[in-house]
Length: 499
Ligand code: DMJ
Image (tube, rainbow, N blue to C red; front, side, top):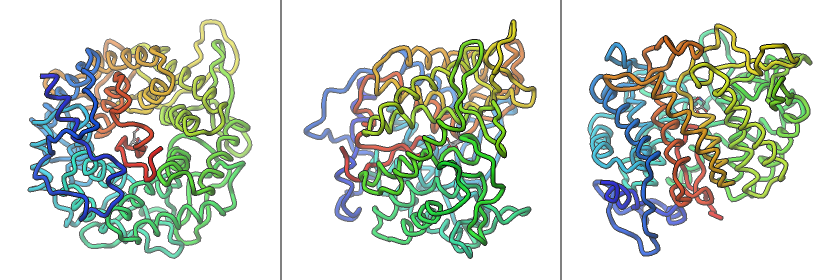
């Protein structure tokens, strides 16, 4: 029942308690404890929209359980699975979502798989960034929410196995690590790493150091940030998309985007500053400078609705192209404003989230494509948003829903919940597979045949549905944003000095 869901979820470790070393703090519950703490408030009842998210999650989970259990991703149409790292990616990404949604039985079953079947001693190449944000991040947040030391042990194991990535001439990590052999390498065709990848693993490794007392993790990732802080090749705080692991220099200079390959660099500047108690000034400086760079170089307004959007700059030429990935930005700007940064960041967040919503609302299925181009000139019969054939897929991505969640938390304006509700209904209409699971689609412009792609990305359960559930909640203590910071895969980690 609903009330049992609430009280079970209540058993979280307060993040400030978890500043002690784990040995003194963690009693070793075999499973999440049910003890209600003294200061625990009456649980806020779950509402209809949240129930709809739970229903969607259960439907997705049924597909994963029936056809892909223990594998990386569900292929819901062919009723099978795909393997990326072979580490049960969807299961790990979804653990804390099940905790937050109160899905006790599902959580217990998944925990058993982690305890008995999750083995990192495997001869596989994994991407450092993807496995850090999804696996290390997912295990750490599940440890914090459940208090179950199994997840910390697993987090330590994968954290250690990823460390060889930092053994490079420049200390800028390689993109790939073989977690069984302890060797690392860049992609076959280059010795470059992606800037967003090497600068969006910090929240997780820093937290791992704090929990284990082993400084190596934090040192390795802090060094990357210090290096990037003084590196030349930035344009008013905006960074290029690649960095060389031998020289430590940016490469492919002159292209600036807030989308793929740069996005979470900006997000993690702010979030590390918040995680560390707002003391690390270089991070804040870089963040503030970058947002000024966005305003100066990347903002334009579209026609006919005059939507403010974030375009790209290539060798001095502005392009009116915006990835859906950029829709993390309104949420990040709002989080910064909530933490005392410039009030005009909140204004910008409000205009940008409207744009991100329009990227859904102006499309036939009500779902955003991967990339849009905005019209800069008014033309009869044209909308603001134009879509190129190669860009009209939707991978069930979370960024807009994520930003809607932050906007609702900080403003209480119910329109954000209504927009999220529309999006959930459109996911149900066009991406739900009757036999279980949801699928990415190839064509958001064709409601009668959205062309299912036969893949459910792990972030649909890790992020999209989690942010939906939190967006529809009126309980600010359901992951309180003054106590937790979400990593870029929606895994909440404690703020070291909570507000
Ligand atoms: C996720 O893995 C993370 O949100 C990452 O920051 C960007 N790509 C996907 C979701 O779109």
